Picture 1 (spheres, rainbow, N blue to C red):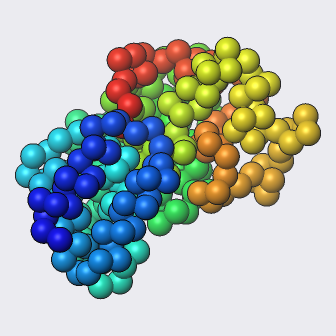
Picture 2 (cartoon, helix red, strand yellow):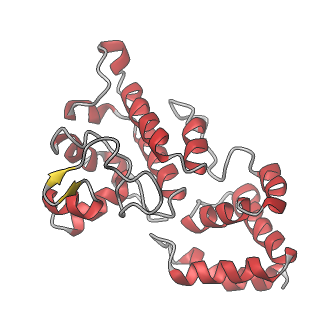
Length: 240
């Protein structure tokens, strides 16, 4: 199958702005990968054209194809030749270098990525200069730079097939009439009405409920999350 035919098969998924990787996407990509080496190379070429040459906005499908390709040992060297740091291109204007977070998420080390995310948020709000707290108050949230918050969220979404991220949690909250108890239940932060104990009772893999990660002050009430969900970062944000 040539690259034109491969692109035709998956083009519609790029334009759908999928919020999750559907069963149809799984099936289509798996079919292409099972055909022959040409199919795998064609998928890589599509990524190169989109993310390196055309520099289009990254989608969940770009991330999914990248992850499926690096699962194949014979493709790893080729993929990392073009994407040595991962599929997400980090802007130089960001306040922090998020490459360590991208690496942890790419490797599915979600617990370590969660800890690093909390550390980054504290750094962004300059807490280390003010005091020695390792958590956020709701009054700290407004000081978080918009571009950095969007980048952290993007990394979580891309490397979880759209399952994790602050914007994912926010959407679940909104779809449940901004009801906190329903949110906690949906994302699995409570079990039978009891708050889960950190860290052993949380799920640190891709099989966790939608919106389960990252954790942010999950034991400190809802003021921090409310402030986060109201942050200007989510204004006019587009689905990927």
